[in-house]
Amino acid sequence: MDNMINSELAEALKIFENPKFMITCDNAGEPNIVPVMSWTVYDNDTLIMGDFMICKTRQNLIDGSKKIGLMVLNMDLESWLVQADFENFHTNDEYYEFMAMTPLFRYNQYTNARSAGVAHAINSSAKFSISKVNVLLEFLKVKRAKGKVPLEESDAGNLPLNVFERFSKMAAIKVIAFYNEDGYPSAFPAFGMVPVSSNRLVMRRSEEKRRGFKLTDGQRVAISLVTLEPAAFQVKGTFREIDENLGYIILDRVYACSLPRPGVRVDIPLL
Figure 1 (cartoon, rainbow, N blue to C red):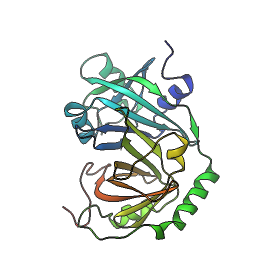
Figure 2: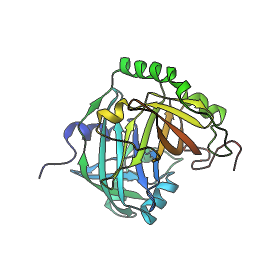
Figure 3: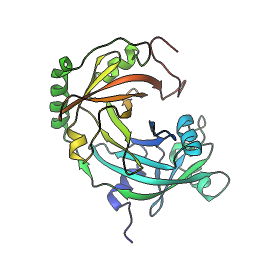
């Protein structure tokens, strides 16, 4: 049987600086996506990560589905989607020792993995490349589409100004995750995405279509935002279809995903 993790994907996983986004779902199919840079290859199709700042993700794995997705990107904007079955969290064994000796944790006196999470890859996509020119074109096109999104005020899901400004940047990495009909969570990069208001995001659907996905009107989605500062946030909401090229998300949750308070809701007004 062929390995699910080919050599090129394995190299991308082994570089800890490469952005990696972990997608889980609860029992109701509500997606959750967070950057987990520690994912790497343990052996063949066995993957391993350090349990650090993943409170909701850990809860989903314990109480919800153990089917996970990993969106792996490199600095050349090449990406892969890996679907895997999460096995368990390990402490005081060879898995934990392996993770503890990686550069992310071995030489860092301020952070330490509580445990090592182990998963077995069951599928991986082809490599998808996005050119910097395409990123620019998608960004310019989606900015012109802002007027197609209906606006409505809400008490929840409002972006704080600092998050709004980061979502407005072309250079920010935005990855949208959802529960796929095959039972595994999936995701794709969405560089063509900008805020229309404090609680609405408009998006181009080019990468969705190119990768063979089909978001449906009313589907729940989660979006991870990572910037160079570094700073990370997650927003959740409901996808609405405009046409085959455009959609928008009605936001109802906004979370911080980095220090000093990972996992805290930061909606305006604070709830």
